[in-house]
Amino acid sequence: MRTNIGTSEWPSSEDRAYEECNKLVLSPDASLRDPARAQACVTTMAVVDARRKQRSEQADRRQRFEEAERDRQLMVQMQQQQQEFIADENRKAARQELLRSLRRPAPAPVHTTCRKIGNTVNCQSQ
Image (cartoon, rainbow, N blue to C red; front, side, top):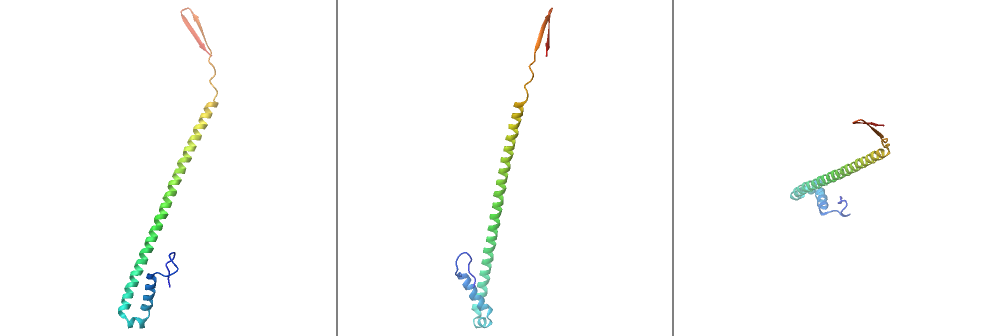
């Protein structure tokens, strides 16, 4: 006898009805003794099968949706980490450039000498 997994050790009323109908339908003698009940059981079993299929499909869709949501969240997290990494690398590069610019030697001092010759001034820079 089937049980509803995860809900109880005892079979549900749906499971019990299905099993009883299954026994009736599979027994030619019982089906011949009560054909109306046998036909009702066939209908009941078809309804139960349809419900089970629907619940299974819903569970599959829910699982696919949850997996897609987890994948989406992981993608967002990876993008955030990538953006943080790029920002860190840009800050490091800017810091390195600043340090390089601070280590460059200062330009040599320029010494300019000017002389006045007559009305003109002549200057030389060294």
